[in-house]
Length: 223
Ligand code: C5P
Image 1: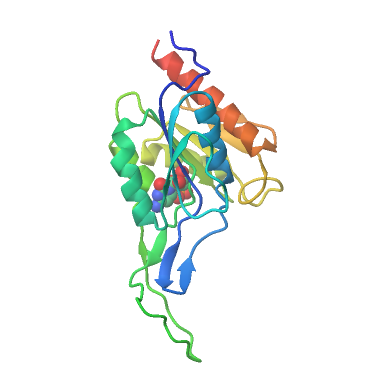
Image 2: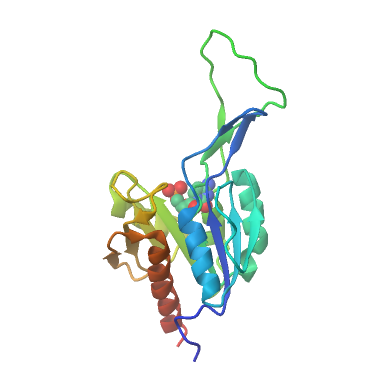
């Protein structure tokens, strides 16, 4: 049998924020730096997987031996991901996708006035939800949940609603975890419903620990 610690497979990873234009000079975005997703892509490639990284705008260098697809908006990320979903044995959806985008982005810069203004926002596609609806036999979907309240209840609901296998839960209000930090402290919600708290560690080590577990679990399923 295949060595379970090696990912001789197709791995799709998303990372970073999305950037939703308001007008040519302004965007809606979030503080994601892409660190967790880039670490996962790099670790999977180092284990021999064929890795595609679909990334929103970040300041990070492309990881070695990874095919990088750069996108800006949630809509573009959705197209890039759905076009590649059938080939992926594993999907790690680490991107912080905007849930809303300006409904009517202006092609010219909106002039400021002294009045307050209202921005009409529209829901973006839920990329992971669509992946869950089209899940391939044997495909493993890993979602990330950044929650500040009722962490595990929300993670379980998310897993069921989106037909996910694993959810990686992090609390952005905790020190040394979540957005921008070089370390992370996550709780894994496993396919069998069990949870595991990982200690605080560098995101590269979180990536290795996550790959160890996700690859081993799929290996058990298939033997
Ligand atoms: O429901 P929530 O947005 O908290 O779920 C987070 C997970 O869903 C993350 O894995 C994120 O990448 C993914 N997501 C997505 N498309 C969206 C919003 C979130 O794939 N529009």
